[in-house]
Amino acid sequence: MISNDATQNLQFGSDDLAKYTFLPQAGDFIRSQGISISDLASNDYQKVVKRAEQRVLEAIKDAKISQDISDREIEIMSFPVALMLVKSTNLEHVMSRFALAEAIRVEQFLKRERNCKIIEELFKTSLGLELEHNYQNPSLPDFKIPLEEYLRRASEFHKNEWKLVNRLVGEGKVFLIQDDLIRLIREEIRIMIMARLKEIKVSKLPENLQEVVKEIIRAAPPPPQSPYAIIHIAPENYPPCVRKALDMLDKGENVPHYGRFLMATYLLSVGKSVDDIVALFPKAPDFKQNVTRYQVEHLAGLKGGRTRYRVPSCNTLQTHQFCFMDPIKCYQITSPLQYPSRKSPELAKASADKNSKSTRAKSSSTHTKERSKRDWTKTRRR
Ligand code: SF4
Image 1 (cartoon, rainbow, N blue to C red):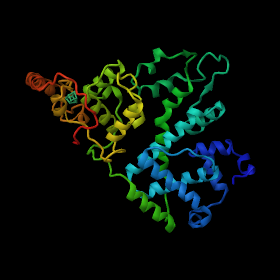
Image 2: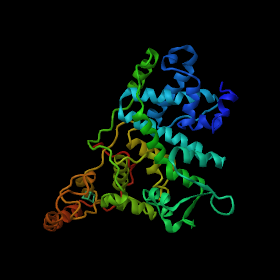
Image 3: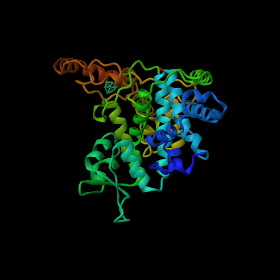
Image 4: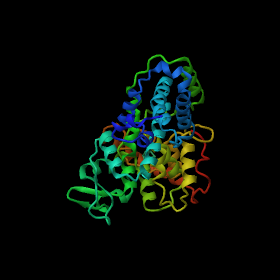
C-alpha cells in the first residue's frame, strides 16, 4: 500500500494520483518505490500488469477506461505500465485510441472534482495554464482564465456559447464554470498523453509483458482506412459543405442524412474525437445523446463491424444535394479532404465559371426532395 510517508512529500494525495495518473508526481511515487521493468515479471506485480492490460483493452474496444480507484497503488502504477504496453505495439492508431480514452477518463474525474486547489494546481503543473478561482463573488462562475488563453482554445469550437461575446469577461480574464473549463482543455490532455507515448523508450520487456503486448495487437482494430493522414485543420478552413452542416446544427436545423455523415466522417478524419463531434449535436431536433454517440463511434470504427467509414466524395455529396461549392477553392477536388484546391485562383476561377452551370444542372437533376429518414450510419461503406 502507499504509505503516508510516501505521499507526504507529494503535492497531491494518493487519491488524486490514482485519478490523475499522468501527473509527474505519480511518476515520482513509482520511482520512490525503486521498481524496475524486470520486477514486473514477479507475482508481486501481477495485479499491476493485469490492470495495465485492462486499461489498454478497454481503450481500444470501448474508447473509455473504467474509473475504479479503490486500489490506488495499482491504479497509479498501472498507468506507466500501460504506456509501455501501448508503445510496444508500435501501432499508431492504438496509441491514439489509448490517449483519447485516458483523456476522457481524466476529464470525467475533473468534472466531478470538488477541490478547486487540485484543479488549479493540476492545470498549472500539466498544462502551464494559470487559473484563478473566483472566491469573491459566488454568483459568478468559479474560474477565470486569461483572455488570450481562452481565445486560443475557444477558436476550435463552433457553438455560439463559446464566442467571446457570450462570455463574462472582466479585467482581461474570462469567467468559466467547471464543466466549460474542462471541456476547453480536453484536447490538450489527449495531446499531452500522446506526447508522453511518443517520447517514452521501452527496453526489452519481460516475457509476461511481451505476451500481453501480443494479446493487445490481436485485439486491436485494423488501422483507419483513410488514405489521408490525420491533419489538424482550423474550422475556418473546413470545406463549405462541412461548414454548412455545422451552421445548420448550430441553428437547430435538421441536417440531412448525408450532411451528418459527411460532418462526422470529415471531423474524425481531421483528428476530432467522438466526444468533440457528439458535443456538436445537442441542438439537433432529434438529438438523443446515446444514439448520436453510438452512431459516431460506429463511423469511427469503434462499434459494430469496426470499420472506419470514409469521407464521402464530392460527387456523392453533389448527388445528394449537399455540395455548396466554392468555385475557386473547390476547383477540381474530388473529396472534401482535398479542400482547398491547390490550383491557382485565376485558373480555378476561369474553369469554375465555365463549369459551374453544368455542375449545378447535374446536382439539381438528382435532387431528392424528401430528406432521408433512415439511420444515417447505414450508409454504404466507401
Ligand atoms: S465541391 Fe466538395 S468540398 Fe466543395 S462544397 Fe462541394 S462537396 Fe464540399
